[in-house]
Length: 127
Ligand code: SF4
Ligand code: SF4
Image (cartoon, rainbow, N blue to C red; front, side, top):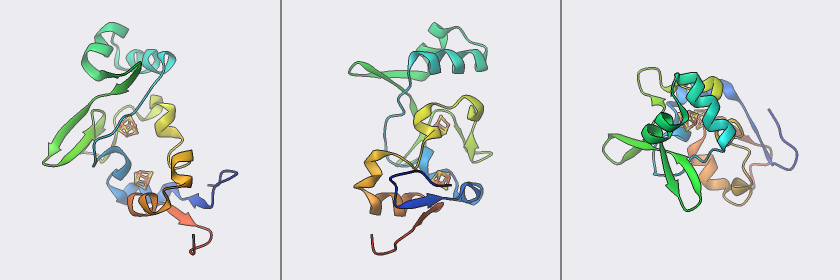
């Protein structure tokens, strides 16, 4: 899988054995917009209010999914399921998750991406 403007490709087959590095580890934010919130709330059979109460935190003017600490020092996205090593809301996961690892941020943080995602293949190993 390729995206214009990126010096790497991505092989989704790597996800099965990876263990969800992009959904766990260091604390971070998974931002989502109102339409995405509604989609996930529907998927879970919750009202928007109930969903927001249980699964969202506010950071400034934006909303993010909450995290949980399952293993000491590791922050899992609240929807990461360690039994299946995968996302429990996969069909309705936010755009931020769908577009990983093709984030502008990684254009200037290649080493971080290289160590995080085993599915990434750099086209030029000298980058
Ligand atoms: S870090 Fe990469 S290989 Fe691992 S689950 Fe995320 S996208 Fe897949
Ligand atoms: S919503 Fe799903 S894909 Fe996105 S970080 Fe959470 S567990 Fe991972």
